[in-house]
Image (cartoon, rainbow, N blue to C red; front, side, top):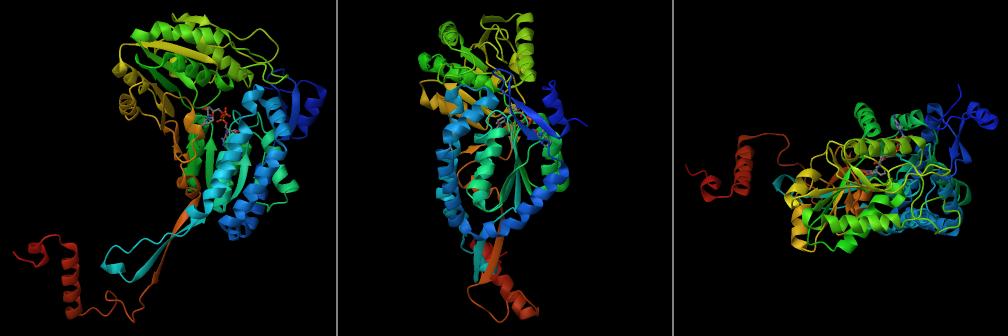
Length: 522
Ligand code: NAD
């Protein structure tokens, strides 16, 4: 059977031929050209890959955190030496402006440096003090032992940063990692994994399998831990399968992030934050600003600032580098989704103050759009749009904004804009979101020491979070040993009345917190 992507059916003879050979084309959404090919790998190939990784993993684990950190450093250096080439490849398969494509490698390298620096300390054995009589003579150890093979399945919107944010801590934890990038943009990540294996000659503990949903499902079926980033619908399927297999999973899913602008906010900064936070990556970021609530007193001024800035943005294929601000929609399906949301809003009484339709040009672009007169009956406020739209809604006060912000099944991140720091902190703690940025947008995806974890239908588990970022890929192992070797333990056989009464008295004396109960006074 030919292998095709639902949105990109091969039409030319060479594409048809490759499709029959088990390959699919990867397109540049900025101009529609085919920029590469990837194989649709079968479940058997996934099993073979995992078997290979499983065989190499003990040697990798035995290197220790220090040895593994050295390899992280080698990968960092290789990425730096190849950054132009990799960024160009990434731009060609995503249609991003150069400025945005060029942010991915620094994010990946930041993760490599951060986890390499902390892995040793984070993975060191812990020795808590015994807490009571039963274990008073014991030495207690918590050891962190890696899951042998971790599967990392990722979407297309950050094709290097996302696999890196998950694969790096897993590798440093001592796991082998099989990655499955999105079929829509697999080329750059596949090239990085090739570099690791072929140019650096590292141990066979990092693999990339390419393919469609069935390849991803085969990964879930073969690994010991699955870390997934993608849509809530796919995440639910993966969670179910992981539950059946009784393997742990981390799910980083969709969002509908609210932005709350209070009357005392710095409107210049809030306006600029809304425009960048909503339109970065053409709005195709899980934590992008998806809906904006503005206090009535500053609504008109805020909207005017946003519209002015959006109208000034440049859009198109950024072939000359740094010449455009807003890039392409990744697929036709994504373009259609945005079109549907905007048309639904306009038909229901909303107005587009700028934008409001697909861009009339080659490639897959949608005009950066500001929508007003929107409400929660409209798809643009209810469903993840994942496009360059900024729907802005007037609210009476902060209470109104909090109520509306929490009125959805998603809880990925949110932002609050106010000059009153205490009020900002109070509001943050009332929002149902795994991350809240005060007077900022998307900051949380760059903060490695604190968690990035979606609430509600935005996810389970989480990534990043300092020590947690690495330890989540480990099984904790409790090891007890003797500090003081006794011939026999007081609780072991034989049971005698004398020993029993003595032990009971000692337990009582140590556990009671008042004299009457300690001495059994009635
Ligand atoms: P998607 O769910 O369609 O695909 C993600 C990955 O899962 C792809 O590699 C795909 O091939 C694979 N896949 C599909 N079906 C599978 C199955 N049954 N079993 C295993 N793997 C399967 O998502 P997408 O369209 O690529 O990405 C967009 C979505 O990702 C948006 O909803 C966005 O919010 C979300 N996202 C979330 C985060 C986060 O950190 N929370 C970050 C980026 C993107």
